[in-house]
Image (tube, helix red, strand yellow):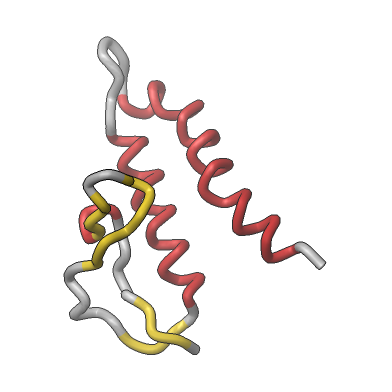
Length: 88
């Protein structure tokens, strides 16, 4: 068990001005506590997938537009950590 955020999503992350891949700080820590860090990772991925699914492309419905993007987003987000965890 480690300290986790408890409700992690992109709206609660501040990134560096010169490097959007570097998290500068996290806000809204009222749900922080002890838990499994995988819970924060899962919440972040779920929020990202939902955001993608609800963001329509011009001239299409949200569900139809997002289907291919969701697969790519999950691959990009989950693959590096999965490979890292499974490495001997």
